[in-house]
Length: 426
Image 1 (cartoon, one colour):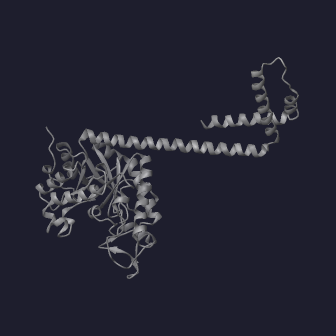
Image 2 (cartoon, helix red, strand yellow):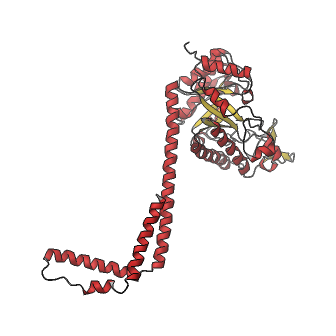
Image 3 (cartoon, one colour):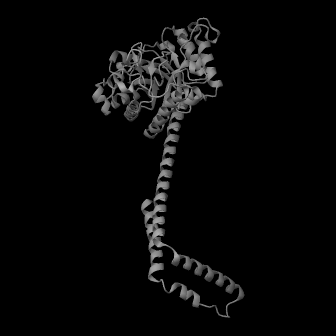
């Protein structure tokens, strides 16, 4: 198409050049000498005179034109035309890809009665005993989604990455590859989510100290219970994380889920950031990263989600961590609030001991999110799969399903009972 447009402009330019410069002395003279005869009808004479006058005016304008400027203008317009055309095509392709992504996602949900997932600790991906128990859950229950670590809380990357930072950090702990993911898909129709920890990374923080949050009181990088946080405005940290996310997508995952996509949940007064630590900067840094990641990952064929604290569904600000419900929901395809009853303080939602009321607490937290306008399709909670009985875990799931929501179960050791889930008919 670009070639055709270029040739067209070239032909027009050539014609104008010939018209003006090969016949400069004859054009106006020939027009001025021509007089219509009396035999022409009144109607035809009127039309003919208008045509001649118009032709004369155009010819005169062409003769007086600055052709060099005209040629430059044509060249410029041609470039703009091609650039606009290229942008339009790219935008169209992008829209088609996004529509296809959501079409496939919706098709999966409809054919599987929603997403029902469990977290798989990535370090276990090459452990036969552990993976056999996961496979048993997949074959015997309605679980159809796996959340698998791609980059962990320890800063380890669990697949073979081409990122130059991994050579410096020596942080690869390869546990699976594309073939491993394909083997899982042979078990049943699966939706695979790669979990990537973002701004909590001890290896990156200790190696690239200028990218970490600084502790001015102790004159060292900031540490919170042995967790080391990167500054969310660090471009190097953001680029590194996004490059890993793109690689994970290309490996065969359907979705990238960002965890620790936040500032430290601390009131410590001696944390030093690259930018002033206020609501506007915090939310902007979190959402700008997620927005950039969503755009890039959509092009690669992956949807994007973010793990957020459960109280964000209730808190109308950002909780001091950069997670504001109304803004973060615009930056991702899905959010997974961690609505673990055990993590709510005494008295939350009117319950002295929230952990003893899983159905009621999960329901109340999700209600807060839905009432603030989060669409059902975007709200996919992480539910508590630890410190709870079988009955308690089932209540977590029931609370989500009663609101027509997809769900994920979290257990750091990936230990799940078959009785948590709906059994498949044999």
